[in-house]
Length: 204
View 1 (cartoon, one colour):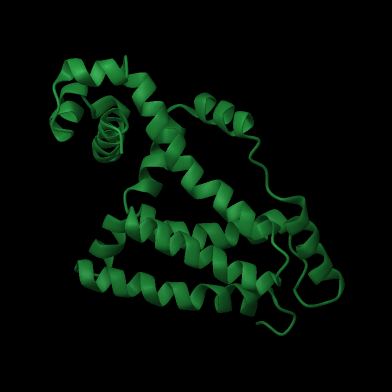
View 2 (cartoon, helix red, strand yellow; view 1 turned 135 degrees about the vertical axis):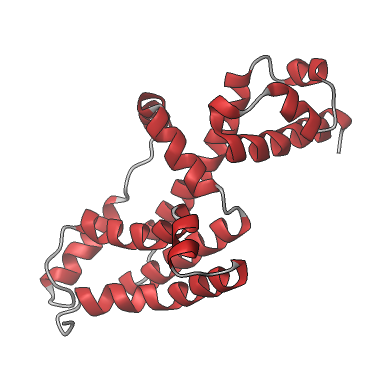
């Protein structure tokens, strides 16, 4: 790998770590330079200011969450298979990068207009094929009537809440890190069944 590319990637990883730990306001360029083991002048050579570097990190975080989920929702598989794959995706993505959900949610609330502009610029929209698939499942009587967007929100919120509120979950249930990881593994298995036991015509 060329030295410049390697240095740029090292800076990005350092920035990702610092921004996710401290947020935009708390992060300092000197800290990012120290984390990347370079001097501040070199950091500014690659990224002229904190805004530019932050946006790249934030953009990468959002892209890790939305497009891959929407690709699953657009696929030609059953609704329950999609639900299972979405749950597995969130579980794997956030297990590898546990601070990502809190980082994205906090920053998009801090600057909602920037987030809206970014989403619009990326043409990120809920796939129409998924919304129609939920409607078809309702029409044939496989699931109870529900707004397709609410159906999707149920899946995402059940996945993300324990991750965004990790400290609360661990404190409330008196879990150490290992017990918390086991808890998420258990949720990965039960969420699809829970969603469909409530959504199906035979559910309580």
